[in-house]
Length: 307
Image: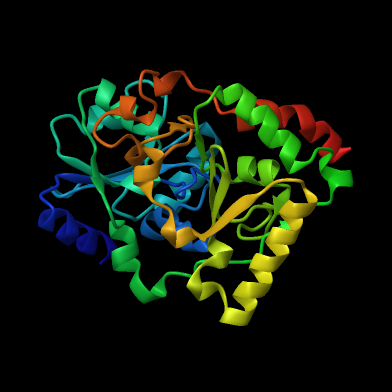
C-alpha cells in the first residue's frame, strides 16, 4: 500500500521515479522518528541508505558495507532490491535512473547529492512536499519542538560573540546559511534534545551583519503564548550574556529564497538553495568552493568543550 500510494503521487506529478533519502532537511545521519521516511517506507532501519521507487514496478535500496547483512534481512520479502554500494557490477543511483524523470523532496536533497546526478545526466526534479509525508499522514510521529538550552561558557570555552567574529572574518563580507544542526549548536552555545542521543535542536542560522535563528521551538505549535514568551526571553538572555544580538524567528518562517542570495554551506545545503543557478548563492563566487567556517572553526574549540 505504501509503494502504491507513492506511485499514485508520482503519476500525478509526471514522474518516472522518486527518491527517498535517509536524512532530514539538515542532512543529519541520525534523525528524529518523524524524519525516518526511508525506514518507514522500506523496513530497513540502518542509519545510511537511499531508496528509489519507479512507476514501472521497480524498487531498490542502496546502502554501504556496514549494513549489507542488516538490509538483506530487513528487505527480505519486500518489494525492494538491495543494491550493495561500491560492489562490482552494482549500478550507482544515477546510472540506475538514466533516462527517467526523477523527483525528490527539495528540502531533503543536499546540493552535492543533486550535483552527482546532474554530472551523470540526470536532472532531479524538486518536489515541495515529500510524497512519503503525504502517504504517512496522521501516522507520522509528532515533530519535536523541544526547548533549546544554554551551554555554559565554562563548557563551551568561547563566547558566541567571539565565534561570530571569527566566522565573519572568514566570510569576508559574504553571508552564510547553516543548516547542519551540530554547527548551529556550536555557533550558538545552545544544545537540545530533538534527536535521540544527539544534543541538537532543529534550526537554521543565517550569519550576516546580524545573526538570525529560525527555531522549531518557537513555532506556534511548540506551546501556548506564555510558553513561547518564556522560551524567547530565555534565549534573548542567553545571547545577551554571550555578548551578541540575535533575531529570533519561528522555524516555519525560514525562506529558501533567502538562502539563494547567500553563500551556503554546500556540503549539507539542500538543493533548493540554488534556485535555477548555483551561482546565485554568491554573485561572482563559486559556491562549490565554499567550506563552512562553522566546520573549520568548530573543530578548534571542541577539544575544550569535551575536556
